[in-house]
Image 1 (cartoon, rainbow, N blue to C red):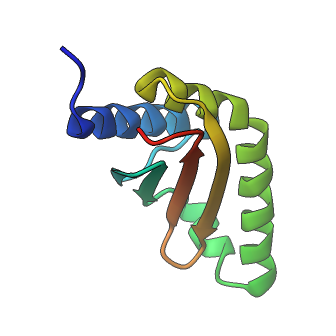
Image 2: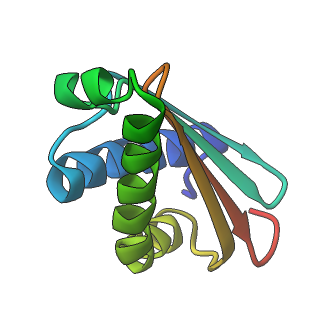
Length: 116
């Protein structure tokens, strides 16, 4: 029996939380995944460490955190795309991400090659 959309969303959430913990060293406090047509939207809250929250108080510190996190995710992009493929059976055509240094929230947007 094929997995339901909700089960796949849950599988993606768990896999990305695990990736954040193993690859970046700190997992989020909350996570949610939504699949809409050919898009997978993942919201992760509480991804910054206490030191990063403190560093983010200055404009230069916030910019540094954004650059570092962007670089780290870029290096782990292949792993992220494989996670999505394993969970959905559909390849990722494009990926976008951003992190808020004020709220500690990260968002991933995966565009799939076709609708899920």
